[in-house]
Image 1 (tube, rainbow, N blue to C red):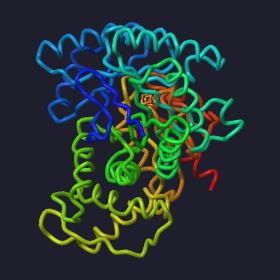
Image 2 (image 1 turned 90 degrees about the vertical axis):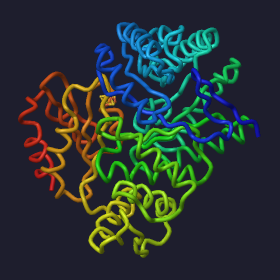
Image 3 (image 1 turned 135 degrees about the vertical axis):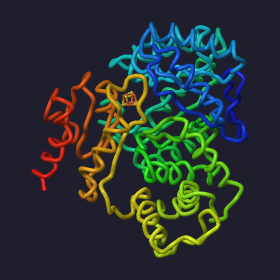
Length: 423
Ligand code: SF4
């Protein structure tokens, strides 16, 4: 089996090497000083590759300046342009500015043939400048062409990305990674497993995979979801670069990612902190739980040199079972990590939403930073709180906007009223 290596700047991904740790800035890319400061903080924490929101040509220019300033200070981490809809922007970023560009080619045009053509144009530029590419499809972001045949399912995700991958291979472009993220750990694991097999069976080549549980939220549950989803795949030998996605300062993601990689070498349940214990528990038990294995085990081990208390064991097991989609004892939160497109302070809003809704056990509530990608990516949420504009929020029931453009100060209480009305 041929293992493809993707080279972005001075970092190689894949080919059986240790997974690369990466993250994404949540600053406004046009705020060069804030973005440079966050890139430096991420690099200092051990982040090997850094992604920045690049919605338009102004952001491409800002990215160029961010890169110039970082390089002048000796910070050589590869920079990844996160482009969603515009192939012209992706081409501009790929032309000697970003080391890698992240796209979903399906967003380039509603017409599949046009999207294919735009992807081919981008591949040409990437080849010319030695720029790497990530093709990333998230659960909930598939077009009707795919969902009408396979549904919004792991198989649909796998088949959709294989179509784009074959375009790359047919055009002799191999410098790429692939991702199929979902906030539901079961969907995420199945999608990557299917893709891994499809690459082996249909191409005889393994392209590097970028793993992540998207919209995982924050705190204990965000860490646990990432440990269960990413950990399950790493145990199977799948995954070449990882991003732990938290609705927090992205610097916090790096320690969690490193703890997760350490679990591959150290299987003990003795941890230095509650955070590390959660990561270890997700890594150790998540795969068995996702596969339908027994859930009647007791958590053991220690935190900071003292045995786990009965209360901690019960509490952490509840979080583990929920992250593994086995038992829902609390509301489930799907929250984006935020980025340069975010329209409000998502960390404090998520805390407010959690406090007001935690009692609704099993209800899935999305908190998303922007209207551009938020509604598509909140996948199977029952309710959504989505930033519509500055100080404005739209509330969703499933995929339908039900209260549009409401003032942010009223949004949490109106969300609670919406949920209560349905109970
Ligand atoms: S939903 Fe919008 S704000 Fe949130 S991470 Fe995605 S693009 Fe950024």
